[in-house]
Image (cartoon, rainbow, N blue to C red; front, side):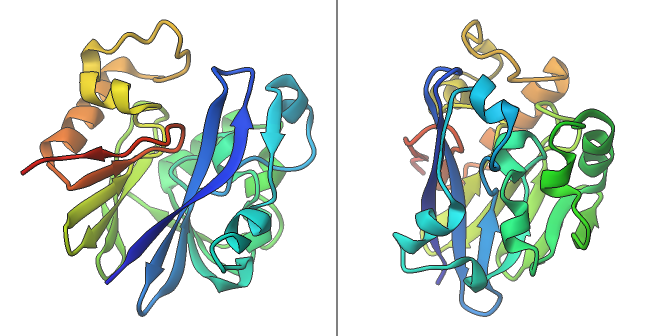
Length: 221
């Protein structure tokens, strides 16, 4: 049996006061698997985006966990609020889509040291892949070219951590018809983004968890 624990890592006040969540998957054999690591310290971006930030270790301690417990890190993508504290977990491999690492090395110059630091061990994937028994990633491009979501098999059915495939539960439910007027940056490629959301929705997983929304969408079967 695998439990999913939500970590509250930050709040971005300059962007609709959204929360920033990471997730720990408590895997019975692989150990703790962390999905996304929040915002780094310190940086001009933190001031610019008015980030109320937390250390990942403090967030984990609320659940009787420590960074040393983490055996695997999965980054849904490499924007600053999803990989900022990767170095805290430098003992673990980072599972990332190859296309995402290539994009980030080109585009994320300000925060490159947060994810591309000396000694970082990348497990590069090209599309859907199994990370551990009952835990897999699925490619969900659109927000970025190499965005991925994480699916966990649970007794109740699959649970998805969708990163920024949809910022909020309302956007997830509305799909391509969502009003994004207050949500700049939801997609880099609208067609790919809409296709990925449809792919996720068609899976009919039991629960959908969001990085920037505390609500969980529970799918009735």
